[in-house]
Length: 308
Ligand SMILES: O=C(O)c1cc(=O)[nH]c(=O)n1[C@@H]1O[C@H](COP(=O)(O)O)[C@@H](O)[C@H]1O
Image (tube, rainbow, N blue to C red; front, top):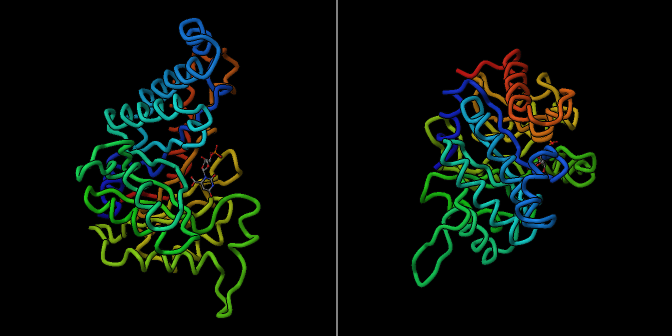
């Protein structure tokens, strides 16, 4: 249970960051796309193979400096069943390289349906009384705004295998305040209510670092809210997206960490994947450019946070 596995990896690499794998075909260098199209044709299959080659190159370049990857399911669903098959291969490859895999699926539904999602992404599909592995991620993102019964099935599925989940609390997007910042009768914001509910659902699952298996998503674009949530939720591990491409800085994300530099991981997707577009090259340097961007992000955050 809990976030111990991820926290250990972060400590070993002294790097509390996760590389997003939000693979759009436009992010893949021309030479990789052309090779895939020659073999498989211009279409869904060719695009999937190009993205897979790109993902593999990124993971090879990043796996000794970044502890985790976060493939966003939308970019794979976008390509139909072949995209989902490629996502499964991407997850398997990531795990073979020792990377912790956060499947960014943002699911949320009634209990029975949540159970089906949880089996699919974490514990395996239940068939004739047995569990058969499907996507087998280490962690998922959830939209828990349907309430605790939409989250609990994931925690049940995660428990058996030391997996975990991040639940949306205060998201990074411009519209997040429209509902999440609304004040309730007792003066708390909706995101505070969500964060507290989420921590209470998972109470008792704290691991050796003190964090439960139900983490929270807190966007880098709202540093004051992160600071408040860190104080409110001492047992909640934070996923902090919005660094880089969305404007979040190292000075903003520092509030997500506790005094030991534990309890949070910061995501960058486009900032790492698309780094090659800023080198002036033709894309053959994409892996080195991603690696340099990941190292720069690590060092940037290290100015403010020391992981003990
Ligand atoms: O759950 C998430 O990861 C997430 C939550 C949130 O509030 N904001 C947010 O940007 N994300 C995801 O984090 C990634 C951000 O990508 P970049 O802006 O390219 O670094 C995308 O995969 C988003 O779907």
